Image 1 (cartoon, rainbow, N blue to C red):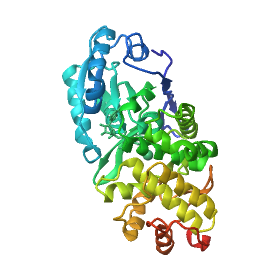
Image 2: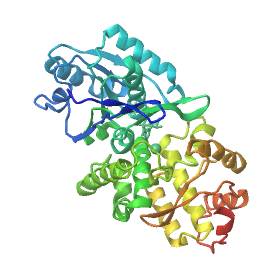
Image 3: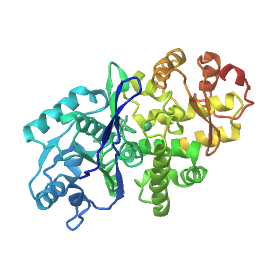
Image 4: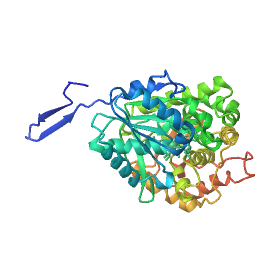
Length: 397
Ligand SMILES: NC(=O)c1ccc[n+]([C@@H]2O[C@H](COP(=O)([O-])OP(=O)(O)OC[C@H]3O[C@@H](n4cnc5c(N)ncnc54)[C@H](O)[C@@H]3O)[C@@H](O)[C@H]2O)c1
Ligand SMILES: [Zn+2]
């Protein structure tokens, strides 16, 4: 508990009163294995002397429920409250946040007692938002159990729900006290969801980390097939480099006051694929489609060598990720960018690869439909053969 003042009152020369917040937020990201094993005190120590509300998903209940309940019974000195949260992307909405708040009120969750989220990105996002608004903010801990959670959703400071037909429209920046990363959860994760998580790793690798990209090219298919079991060294490299790389990118821009973010790569066209497919395309799958389209666009305008475009498409294919959604309508895809521009305060700030592990930003206001269509044509089945790109940078810049 800090005793340092967390704000100050200033009187400006014109008499205006100004309150300044000095609040510092700290988030610890720790690694652990076999989290619910007797003797593993990582989660117990994170909860400490508080009575938590533990919120977990049906998959966690099915695979780890008995061990989790035994663990909490043994290690929570004042007991615990529990809530099973069964939500999918189409129901990742404010009503779920309300349900969590209702359960927290019933449990009499105190101001310093944590909500503990154990599940995939949907669970950690919902609990993060509920923790931010319940009593205007209670602590929370995140225990991601999917690959997306381990390398992305669980380690950042953001949370959000879908609203008014828009992906992630309502949310907060509200870091958890601690995120505990246990890759052993991936052993029970269905392969589709392993590939789904690999898309976020591919996003980071493509634009910032050529070494990680080579690991994915070399071992991505095996890593997905073995649920990150083999090859072990590459599994460790994937998690460690992805987590470290992501946090490194986030650190200088935690509240996203800079709109040119490499981590937005793969997240410009992806909301369209997710929403237009009515969420039959998963988040990571949509990110992969965005990566593929971005690579094709970059090659189309002449800033990415066709050989690198083909490496990117080949890497996604090896991970078992599709390069586009069959129902794609390029007009609607282009129109969906209006919402993205709104979110980035008026400019698209499109992150595009200019090589493996390198990127640039293109901040155009109007997107040329012809180029978008030409790039998308590369992503139809049977069209992945190299051809001369028709460079027209002016139309995009
Ligand atoms: N806040 C952020 O910064 C951020 C970043 C990336 C993604 N996200 C969000 O995360 C969500 C996607 O996350 P997700 O892919 O984890 O989805 P998810 O939470 O739906 O989990 C995927 C599936 O895996 C199952 N599952 C979870 N853990 C399991 C395990 N260990 N064993 C077996 N089955 C398991 C779940 O029941 C579910 O069916 C999206 O809503 C996305 O917007 C948020
Ligand atoms: Zn994402």
